[in-house]
Image (cartoon, rainbow, N blue to C red; front, side, top):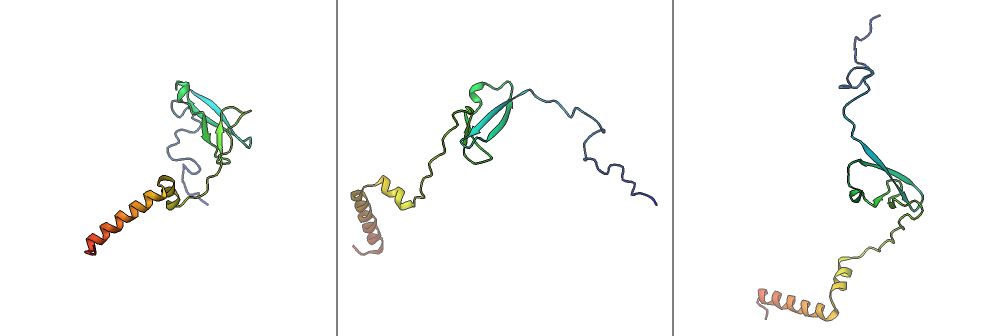
Length: 118
């Protein structure tokens, strides 16, 4: 009984010769650990020649979604959830009741002028 004759069965297309160890140039990199408030550690890798000020102090933890910082003993605190606000709630934060009445009166007068109802 003959086999299918497929010589590359079980190998990745473009993988190169079997046993090849070097698949290109590997840049030097540094590992930076981040911890969230639940104690989860996340490691991120950065290029070794990147300035230290460009490495972020906090990230979002992929484990919990919480902010994670570089200080294991003092991780960032959990953000306090803000309740959902409607558009009207945001408007009320920006306008006083008197401003709202003035704006409403102006809008109604413009509407009446357009409709010919002075």
